[in-house]
Length: 112
Length: 118
Image 1 (tube, each protein chain N blue to C red):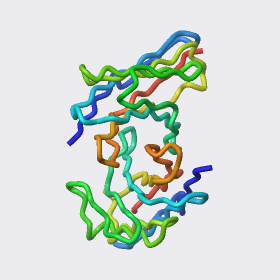
Image 2 (cartoon, rainbow over the protein chains, first blue to last red):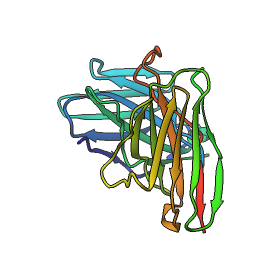
Image 3 (cartoon, rainbow over the protein chains, first blue to last red):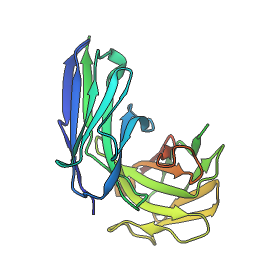
Image 4 (spheres, one colour):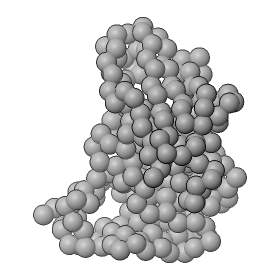
């Protein structure tokens, strides 16, 4: 089955700087890659997603890049703000399968 | 749109008792629902996938006789933790997916249920 690795596990960034979180996946048939933000004790919230026919997608301060050949995708947050502090999870969905496989999570802390 | 609710939001029970958690899609019909378990500071681990009117598909290592899943309608799925033990204490989160939604890939998550077994 699919295996998703995520790095780093923790990340501290000065407010205003950029943060980058990276994930790799194992199943070349995976075609959907969402990113979730989860605050303590709350539900995961979808913040951005990308499909395998697209290399990059941007939504305001958030962007995701996908390299299908290398089987990795990254989340980029620019101009970070204190409210960006949370745990971020990447996920991958193999083609023809409804299941999502989640990465191990990155705890992002924005330092004011 | 695309709101998923869970009930209860938290529950404390004694060891050996059973606990039922409900997951409802409030404004759409959920063709598929998923149940996850999340231990503190860990990732979401899929327990099972359920489709309305059929038996749930459990992930490897998840005891189907212990974690009973029923998806009786397109808006309701229930997870019953039978004979709960302290090691079952966790955050249980459901998600729902609609085959007819515009974002057909997206899963919509419930707010989670924190189970504590004494």
